[in-house]
Structure formats: structure tokens, C-alpha cells
Length: 177
Image 1 (cartoon, one colour):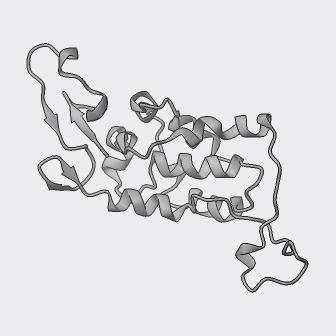
Image 2 (cartoon, rainbow, N blue to C red):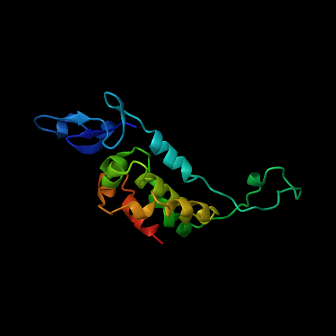
Image 3 (cartoon, rainbow, N blue to C red):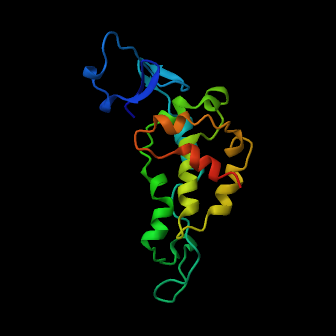
């Protein structure tokens, strides 16, 4: 990610222009992440959190297309149609580019590095809203766990800094069920 702190605010370096700043500009590594070197941060926990929520469609078991049993149940996924209205339910949450700015803005992640974080929770919410997915129960146990949605204190800064206007704060609150 080209995310970094610019004058103490999480920004994408690729979308930040010097001409937009007068006077001095201070650039630092993304806040709340361990620093590897210079502006490079360790995104290991960020990646692990995204992987933990299973960011893919978990299918419903269905017979193979040829009627014969398939050796892998994971490949026996039924084909589900999706209307534009069904897509619209989760579309906003699918626009995340995994830049990590929301984690740099999140005071809870700064205090508790085990917190799943805004991007992972938003990604889980995206798949939970998808009518083709059947993995909501698996994700909800993680989201309702010790470091899930209930750890969020709803400051909302994660949504303010998102360059794609994804609104992770809304996804987190909607996940509190």
C-alpha cells in the first residue's frame, strides 16, 4: 500500500500532491503498524485479519453439474443468480482497496493490535450481505468474538479517511447484531 501519514493524517501517497500543501509537509509511516524501515510498515496482522474472515464466497453444497458426486465438496457450489438490488446491498462495502488507512485512523486498533479492524470487518460484512454466500455463521462467530465488532468504540474516523468512501464505521455498526 502507498498509505502513509501526511501531516498526521492517513493518506494515499499516490493521490497526495505537493501542490495541495503550503509550507512544510511531514510524511511518516502509517500509524498503528509496526515499522519495518523508513516508511515501510509491517502489514502482517492486517493481512491475517483479512484472511481470517474468509473473504470469498462460501458456497452451498449442491450436486455436481453432471449428477455424479464430486470428490471435493467445496467444488459443489450452486450457481445463484443475483439481481441488481441484491448487488446494491453490499456494493459500497466491496469497493475497499485494502490500503490500511482505516487502521491508521482507528484509535481502537492503536490500543488493541489484536482488534480485527475496520477493513476486515467491512469485508466480512460485504460477504455476509451477499445472497450467494453461505458462510455468515462462520464469520459472525469471529465478528462477535473478543476482538470483533464489539471492540469498536465508533469514533468514525475510519470512514472519514477512506479514499473509496466505503464507510467501515457503518459496516461495523451493522455487524453488531
